[in-house]
Image 1: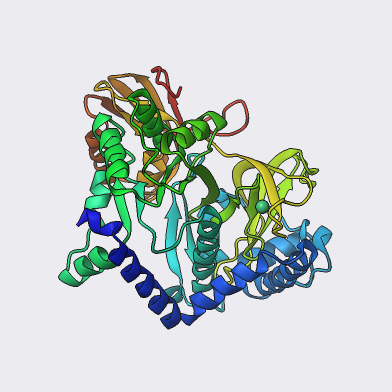
Image 2: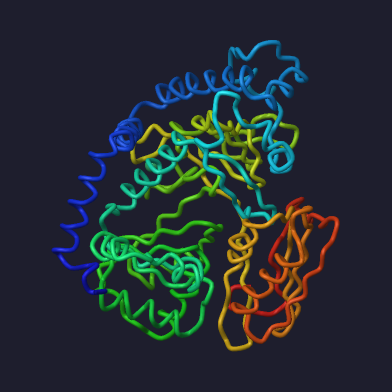
Amino acid sequence: METGLSSFSSIILRKSFFNIYFSLHGEFGKTLSAAREMQWRPADDIREYQWRKLSALIKHAYDNVPFYRERMKKAGFSTGNINDFEQFRKIPILTKKDINEHLDELVSATASKSSLLLNATGGSTGAPVHYYQDKAMILGQWAATHRFFDWAGRAPWDHVAKLWGSSFDIENAKPKTWKGNLYVRLFEGVKFFPAFEMNERTFSEFAEYVRRFKPACVESYAVPLALTGKYILDRGIDLSGSGVRCAVTSAEKLIEDHRKIIESAFHCRVYDRYGGRELGNVAAECGSGGYHTADDFLYLEILNEDGSPAKEGASGKIVITSLENFGMPFIRYQNDDMGTLATGGCECGRGLSRLKSIDGRIQGVITLGNGGFVSGVIFPHLFKDFDIKLYNIEQESLEYIKVRVVPGPDFGRKDEDFCKEVLSRHLPGMEIEFEKTDGIPAGPSGKFSFVTSKVKSPFS
Ligand SMILES: [Zn+2]
């Protein structure tokens, strides 16, 4: 059936299915059409649109969300009406710690919890967060993602080869019913490969799949795709005839060397995107340079250490306000990454604002004794489902790895055993020591370097 993913009839079938699906789910179709139209408006129009949504959100938060009303009163606000961006910047920053400690007070009095989706992120900086999302936010994130796929030249019905999660996730995600199976066989154009098991078998199977079945797009966390690209180049595997149109990377910082490796190996351009589970597609590359922010769904600030706005071209802390999640507003949320605003407009002509670079972190790579690698993305992926406040991982040698966690009250012995068991399946031949601690010191940059390895790898 694998050949079916790229066959002409299969693509037509998926395209028809998506068109029917979009027309049945009118709200999503409308959100996506509006987003597609918005990107071409002049920057001033977009800023005005943002301001209208932002000021309505702040008023709503003051009136209905206990956490913000309290905070804003303390900061000297007597109403939720704000006059300008300067006044907006007086609202205190929201940290991951705030969310974890005040989750219930962050939910709007006008929302019922049953209408919200409880979600979690493992955090790109070693601190998991739990939060609620409402339907409007999910629709917005979905629309921003599809608009980005337009930029990369990828259609929703395209055939994609994707390195993602582990083989266990891929197995668990398989449908359990015949209807589910039929749906996947007919409509799902994605072939998954395990990104947490980076070894010769995964590299060669991925390369062989791309060569034989010619997907329109390859998608992955940045480092696993670069490792696969390196394998392809080292072995002289020629994928020039595969017709891959784009490589989409995300979840960790894409460095320029990795971009070059991926582009040479797959003979296509890389389109990197930046975001997180909690805020979706925050910014993404259009192909003309830099990352356009999803201004219609969020308001992004780059701040200096003292909280003042950083100048264009200067690096600062990324702070994001979701313009959608009225059920649990994210106002001035600091996600612990750094970014730099681009100067001037973009050659592509889009009015969406633009980041020159994003200084998120490379999640690190664990090297195995059998010659394989495991992406550091596995740790946030696993720990997001447990009551862990902070963690960091140190690989001492090919045989020994230390996992330090700051546990919350609900992280028990069973959870620790479960995490150890999952990790030992992915890290064969390695002793895994769990150390529970009260705190983890920040690195020299003030950020928590959460996966470090003393073992040399091609990517260390
Ligand atoms: Zn552009």
